[in-house]
Image (tube, rainbow, N blue to C red; front, side, top):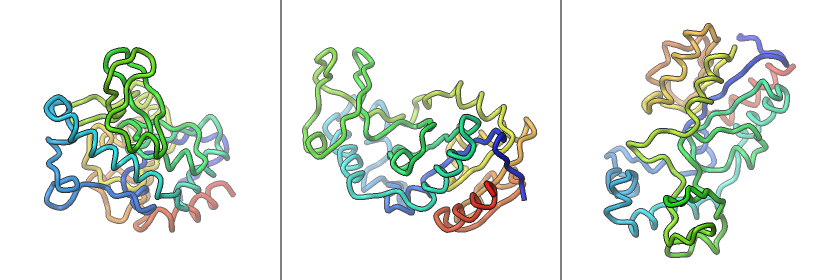
Length: 238
């Protein structure tokens, strides 16, 4: 088993599988639709320009769902590992929910954005607009410049993920890279393990099925993160 001690530099990458165990819908169906919508109609900059009302309502429903889900044992185990490692730990997530933070994680990089936040395209203000009083509204104006329509603080298809320089720095200098609940389909997230591997990091995977990039793992644990991670983390920190 890969060895982790209190001074190990560890990076964890999480994907939709971790949130799915809490009941968060992953939106993408086998037919390529998101809740009966084409990706092009609700998750691209062009969609926002073309039909703001449709995109807004789609993400308001995603945001409202945050009120009905809770962190699972996988989230709690990741937070426990962060508490053990301190500043040598970095959590990168593709998920746009806030379950990691609610589970106790502190050092979280949301590379694809956050549902709880909205952004102004005029002044770049980013704020937390969370709660039923926000989720029932038809558009929300910017509290800084007054622009009438904030957009979801989400990285849409065709946009560059957030904090890529910080992510690449963390991955290229880590000693252990752990991928949890990811399919290995979505880039650039799927390519991070290649960066870690090329810099001699030991790579661990946890997922229901072997992902597309499974060949890079030194160890792979198949199953639900909520069932596997608590035991793994306990072994690592003991």
